[in-house]
Amino acid sequence: MKVRQIMSQHPVTAAPETTIDEVLSMLASHPVRHLPILEGEILVGMVNDRDLCRLSLTPLWEAGAINAMNDRLSAPIANVMTPEVLAVDPESDISDAAAIMAEMRLGALPVVDQLTGRFCGLLSYDDLLRAFSHHA
Image 1 (cartoon, rainbow, N blue to C red):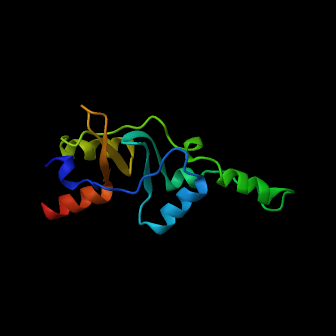
Image 2: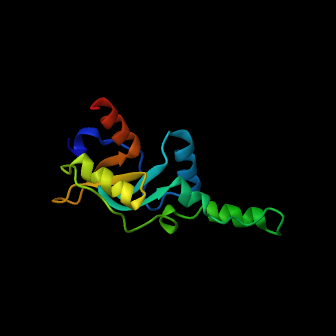
């Protein structure tokens, strides 16, 4: 079975200039943990809920903490995204993609057409579990 058969074809995405606050809202309002960052149809990075949890926000008891937090949240997601991202081709076999995800401890892999460089979708471990459970 090929990645294109089970991937999410229209995942929630963001642009590099989307603010961290906007991305937090997107993740809160959609049942997703991984967000591809696109410039047009080209993948330029990924961010996940753990990346955002690692943000060290200034403790609220410090002077100016609210302003510092607002400044941090209004920064572009490009500041915290992972820019160099491993991706799979839509024609890759799902067992190969699953092996990569297990070895690299990834919850999702972006799917990028190797010929055009165009972002095609997102393959999550949920997609893999559904596919394997239907074919077991």
